[in-house]
Length: 472
Image 1 (cartoon, rainbow, N blue to C red):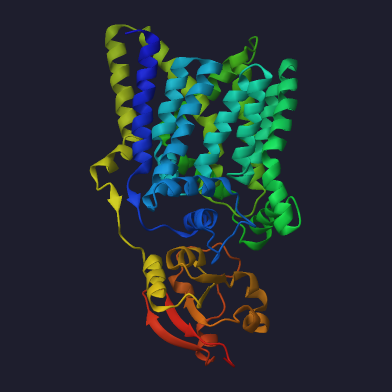
Image 2 (cartoon, rainbow, N blue to C red):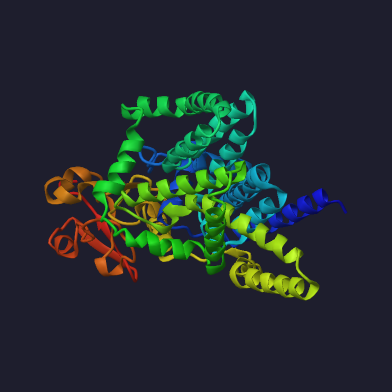
């Protein structure tokens, strides 16, 4: 079998396993952010108007879910769509690295993207992070190819990444750094910018038409993570790096940095320059994310691009060094490499032994189901927590009470003008919140003192009240 065929066979196997471990288990219950994108898919597909956050959330992932639901109206479709889209990160990592560094580093990068446990975990969740990384890698690969046609496609992929996750905008720094190394790429960069602008223009026009400003969701999203949520210490992200990348990957990355330093005094070749561009962009991205008060581990997933690629170069260097050694050393090195791979990257495959579907209902989904069964389409659901979950699974009009927390006692009657239900979450029952003040209103004291609220059902972490505005 030719070397080329071996590479493509290995890639096909990696891709098949990657999409499988990202898809299963096919899940019925989803959490807060996931249900926002599922709800938006419903808005796009059937025009439901009970709840939406398009003023804040990028649209592309929900569009993809809607396309899937149009083919098969089953909630499991979202897991399948997510698996396919996030597996594209594995494919585009291979294509990008193969073009810049060679086929063997490309296979190594594909393997690391496919089976690094945290990347698999976040690829399974119905969130924008890994789909955005896939589109970023696609744009980087296309930008590497000569000719205006590929620059146009790179610009389109970049714009789609931005419409998947707004922080993908920062990828323009990579393109600028890469173009600075070659005057030929400055023209490519200009074409990319125009193509990206044309691709994103319909979305910006729609935003302007509906919300009055082309940049409304970008500005609002920035304000939410910098002003309206509790700030998190910078140390959180340094701990997050340890969570994202397993020990062997961190060691491989350190080896890659060492190899870069060893070549520093030599004439810098194109591959070394490219690694320096990736490293510089990664450090700049980390510095930018540190300026944002609201922090979550998954926000650092774009760092997987430089870390995995530089680590893949280390894998290649080790592979070639072992191949030159005597047979005993070669065998020992190979066995050690297999052992490390099993220890750090085999865990995602273990879930293939478990059931491939999960029909269990989380408590939030059970609450939404109760509301769906005991309410009418004329009722409104009010909540200061988990409101997207309640909206998606109940199908009822849902109003978030978060925006009025600072002035709740002055405006609550206007905000809660329609009858329906209040879902109250005591602070002790809220497992995670990013609010500066987790003591949400209405609190228990307020509810007990207000005759408009009548208890109808208690759950372990929440209480449902029937709500009848005064005067109705």
